[in-house]
Length: 87
Image 1 (cartoon, rainbow, N blue to C red):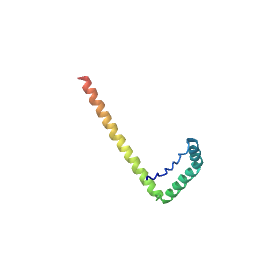
Image 2 (cartoon, rainbow, N blue to C red):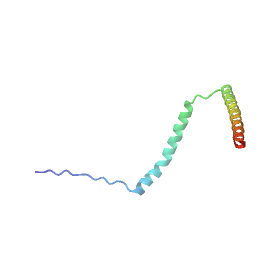
Image 3 (cartoon, rainbow, N blue to C red):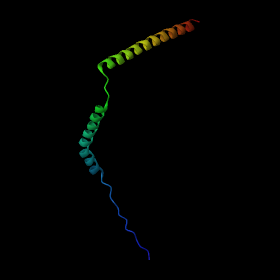
Image 4 (cartoon, one colour):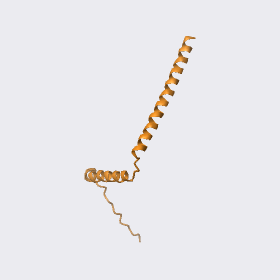
């Protein structure tokens, strides 16, 4: 004799019920994200005022040096291009 197994079919919830559940859970998910953000910001080791000023001066000096290097390279390359065109 063959025994038939009963197969339970579970219906997938419809689009609108899933959309309603998603909308209902949205405020809680947003609130959870902000709670996690605040918790992570409490773990951050913020620099002191002196460190912040020193780091800022290093970055500004680096940007100025790079701007000078790029300016020199641009001037040199445009000079070379003008010389090649004049040939």
